[in-house]
Image 1 (cartoon, one colour):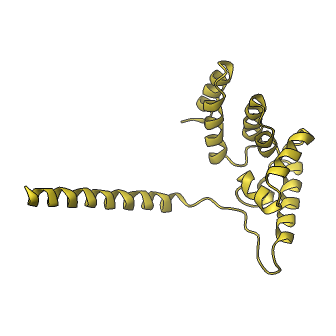
Image 2: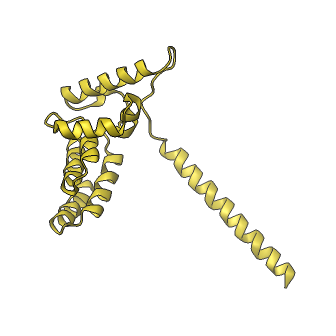
Image 3: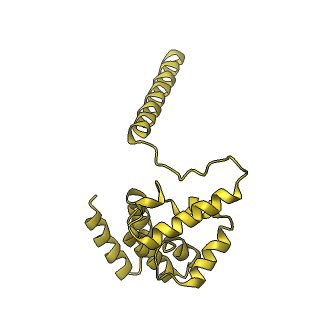
Length: 160
């Protein structure tokens, strides 16, 4: 679905007080567009509506005007820098961030995560699996399932 269409549905959900579907839709958009700080901010706003300071701080962590109490709640829930970096679900380097504030915050977080690890262990920012690998796994799983069903049908045919 197009991003604008999903955002329209989010607006309708929020207007009707349906925060859970709005959170699910926005989470899906953030997964597809991890560098879009506006989507992260909108997701944080819905979490803020539900009173979830941890998630509001998580998704607004890279924004400049984030409430300090929400940042503190997020940092308490994810005490190590490496945990926070994974929780942000940022993909790629800090240079991909659209604002100076976000780039600085990501770079500081990556440096803190590296400092937590033993010497010589690199800190990798999580990368998405390539589409073809995911598609191949799906097709392979479908083939195995089809063969299993065929095998069960054959055995039932022999027994009758």
